[in-house]
Amino acid sequence: MLFFPTAGSTNDVAAACVERWTEAGDADALEGLVVLADAQTAGRGRHGRVWQSPPGSGLYVSVLLTPWRARVDPARAATLVTLAAGVALAEGVEAATGLRADLKWPNDLLAGGRKLSGILAEASSSTGGRGAPGLDTVIVGFGINVHPAAFPAELADRATSIETELGRAVDRAPVLAAVLSSLAGRYEDLLAGRFDAILDAWRRRAPSAVGRRVRWTGPEGTREGVAAGIDDRGALLVRTAGGTERIVAGEVAWL
View (cartoon, rainbow, N blue to C red):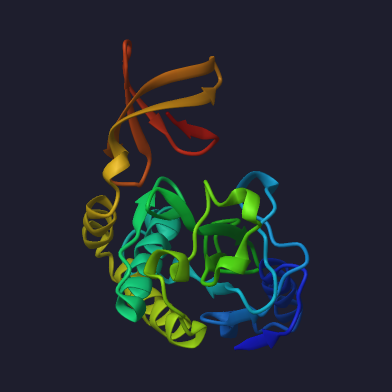
């Protein structure tokens, strides 16, 4: 584990490690590396959004995984990394604190309908690796709001923290330990090809993935439909007047 009192972005630190260790010919040894910061000055979420990361208030973590090692369908394992991480974070938070979090496709944890945690998975390809291009290493970054100070007061209608939901003080260390333990278990599920276990666990924690109206932007412009769950590769299914659409990535607004 690498710990920094302050880092720009733990994902950027992790990516620099991949580049440096690849040049040294030892990139395989990076699997499982954890980068932890007490604060970030350039934390980010999907689509370049800022992730508030003040000191002493949340968990700001990146973990390096190599899904090309999967013993069954490595490409599918890489595709499901974000959903597996979401399940692991929800399970870890609940194990450490008793707080049950819901999942929102593709990468958010919610409590009381507000954002508790976000996940940013980024591919970092190492030259000469054995996986598909761009999939050798996946950097799974996540932020978890533990204390209310983790986000500005003006975001209180959209964001929350573990302490806010529980109404009591929470130590970050046991939460981190539980989340990393759960992540290790769900990663082993990916490597062993136990994809249905991950998908079923995700579905149980994602009530909004079925029956919720959504809007998204695709090649044909802005569209709307009703969420109909996820498929076996983690894509969001949406029913429209013209049939069922499969959304793999992009901006989805939950209405």
